[in-house]
Image (cartoon, rainbow, N blue to C red; front, side):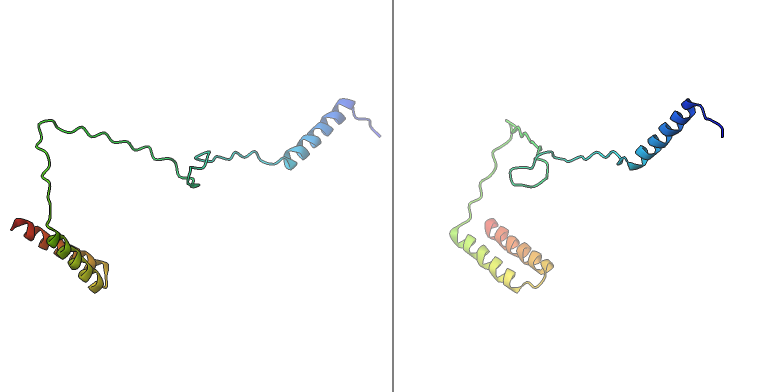
Length: 110
C-alpha cells in the first residue's frame, strides 16, 4: 500500500470541502424597493415632483369674464340632464354635451 504525501491528502480534502460549500451556499440576491418608504396614502407610487411656474404677460389684456344669466345657466343644466338621461353610449353623451354647449354659446352671442 502506497502512502500519499500529507499535502496531497490535505489538498484533496480542501477541494472536497470547497466543492461541498459551494453547492450548499445560497446564491447572493439583492432586493430593491422603490420608493423605499410608503407614501402618506399607503401607495408605493413615488411622490409627484411636477412643478409649474406661470408668469403672466404684463402687456396682455385681462381675460374677459363671462357671466351667464341664471335663466341661461338653468337652461344649460336642464339640457345636460335631458341629454345625459337619453344617452345610451359614451358617444351619445359627448354629442349631447357638445349640443348643450353650442346652445349656451348661441345664448351668449345674443
